Length: 217
Image (cartoon, rainbow, N blue to C red; front, side, top):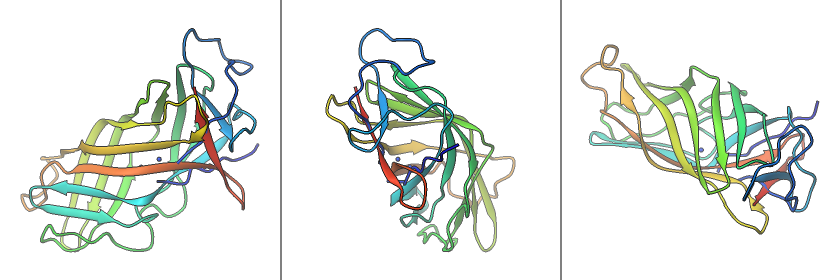
């Protein structure tokens, strides 16, 4: 089974020029979203695996200060394509691939020093919509590990924007100001309150020489 790699831009991916539903998927009325291997390549095959990365860094902003994770230092998710060529295409994010928070800590202005950010409680589902309003759904938990404490936060969804274009473009998932709720029963009072996540994720089709995933409607 081939592997598809999503190179994070929390999301640049791909669309091709196929307006019909893939074999094994029901045709959808109106605009549908098709994901392809590169610009003009074949539609992605159901069951293929890929990686989702962020390539521009991720910021967590709060009243107490910001945590800024550099490109490729926040984490990489391994997922499986469940549907393609529908109004909403599903990708099941099953596990963290490789190192979670990179080999470097994320600088912060919170007064707690740098943090290492870990993702937990997978699987999650990434819903890519033909109207450009996409989201990740699940019990989405983030652990911020500081030198003196660990702070936990949770959300049930991460809303983002994806391309909705008739012209094939790299698939991305852009997040802006997505708030996470503090786990008050666990966190100490020194933990920042309700950090808001912003970042841009991109996608690529795996192998040693990864190829960008494209998308079109």
